[in-house]
Image 1 (cartoon, helix red, strand yellow):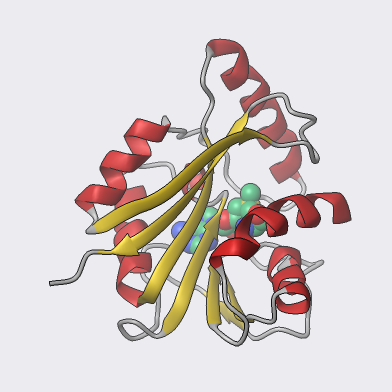
Image 2: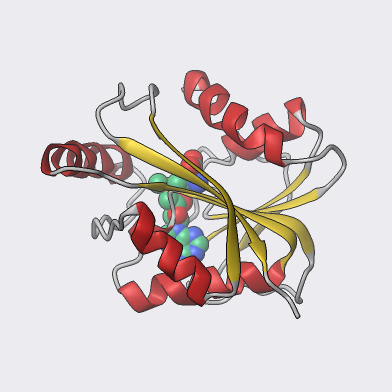
Length: 190
Ligand SMILES: C[S@@+](CC[C@H](N)C(=O)[O-])C[C@H]1O[C@@H](n2cnc3c(N)ncnc32)[C@H](O)[C@@H]1O
């Protein structure tokens, strides 16, 4: 799966600076954070509600006991990542709660990538891949996807400004069968 890290890391890298701190919420294996540490020089902390048996072991890790709260002070990391996490929350309102938590703990920026199917065929492919890829780790798959406009509304309601959004067909591992969107978000603070 090194191809996946290259593809996703390459999209995130332009929005990260060397030496800055990154909280990776829903880090899974931690391999994307590992890639960003090696190639960009960021300083990641991993956090997840599920213990992955193949997680990288040489990065700081925080086990999240509460799926709707991040146990960190306000603005404690330069950047927060949430990559393919939000559609694993079953309740729409819980997605908004965790987005607000991420907005609270970031100092500068929040980078979110979500599955954003654009048609019925796209969604069918997305559902199939999501189920297959998450089965092994026991990650729930309620398929609570939203459109780009739907996510934009959530982010704006959560006090975030969309600085940049790019929708693309991911090559790895899903072979360009449906769309992902990277959102670059900044907190609007008075
Ligand atoms: C599809 S995996 C993505 C893992 C990793 N971000 C990546 O892209 O390789 C979704 C991850 O979100 C995590 N997750 C689900 N709900 C969460 C929550 N409320 N807080 C933090 N992590 C959560 C799961 O445990 C899982 O690791």
